[in-house]
Image (cartoon, rainbow, N blue to C red; front, side, top):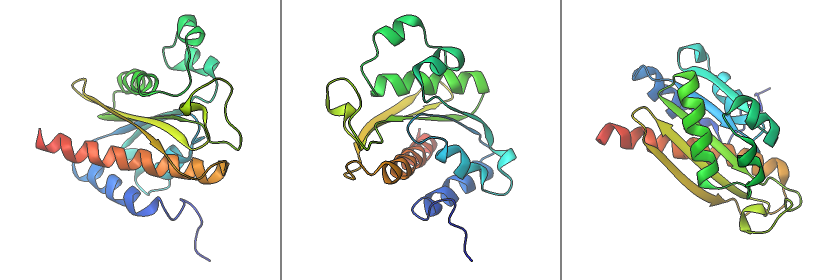
Length: 176
């Protein structure tokens, strides 16, 4: 019986990323929220992950971001939901703390209902993603899955989209 993990939609890009990391002797760390650990677990499912995986945090609550990701009380008071600024800060902080070549950060609204607050970033299927790299460069995007309130589907798609951004950042970094 074939394994159902990592999710089939993630496997092709996961294999590309881990091959790149291994062949280039580079490392990855992860800061994820709404994906709930799927990104880290997917990376760790690859044999030899200890060569490229530096660590990861599932920062599901705002309080966990204070304890583990460098947030302050002001950050919590001013929180407006997932944004590229939020994930860029998470990615930079965690990459620096774990000393990885890259850090992929994700924060989104998985559903099934909208998150409290106002704005499109509170609707199910919205995700903000960032990759921080050595040298201080950060690339960040906002995406929408189009899956509505399908919580599990959104979580997997957040992971796939995040890994896609990581791959693009890795390939662009070579051109710089």
